[in-house]
Length: 359
Ligand code: ZN
Image (cartoon, rainbow, N blue to C red; front, top):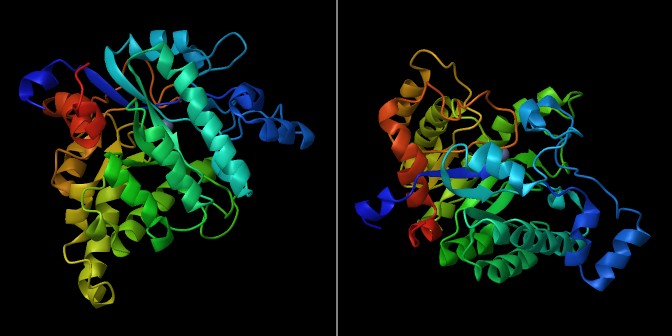
């Protein structure tokens, strides 16, 4: 893409959340067998099982409708987020707990239904919307099948997994997914969340949602370490990984530790020939909501300085989650000189399918 072409883009929002209202919404997208199964199993009216919908952080108060719901209605998303911030593209990340089920066939059926639901109910209705392909990580063969099926639709620009699953994402059994990702120019988006097949802390189950949400950054750190140490980027150097809703300020301190200990024990992973910090700069990106830094002072400028790259941060609103008030979608803590880069240039450089088209 030339500089002139990129000028025609305004903001590219890399994390918005259409909400699947309940299992019944997916019925038309399930085959006959699974339609009957969800009724027989008594889960046909199951509501969203991703995040507690009534928790304050799940939706900003002024974005809730009369019933207290948010993220269900495309007109509301248009008014509250897309039109409001002059968005030219927004990437929809659906969180409906597909990753939580144990049955591989059920997981594949639910992922298929959810991706088709997203395409029909949202992407077809606003040309600014793009999608992430939700995959059934419970079975890698099924996951690759789902990528191949959805990748034909160029509106799908990313593969979506949760921060905490069955195993660290660098493990070799997942590599066919990264081969497919690289083949189709699809970044791997890792969003905060868990399959809840393991406790969300390394110490066991916490009692409170607050602890669950805070522990996500530990999950992100472990995934970064796993993907780098296992050598994923040696095999798939073009693969981009986007850490979504992870926060930002944990990155420099963690990467310093990772790079320091890599220097000491790199004989264990001789295929990792460059510093993890360098790999992070090349292959990882972070969305900017929530921005876990004070709005005053130079914390964020220093974080960017520590990462030694202006290319890492990607614009996101995290609509309808409550991460900021008013119109402060880009925190005043982010230096002005980086605004256009974070809103347009960095997302275009990350999502190759977007840079192949003009808005
Ligand atoms: Zn999010």
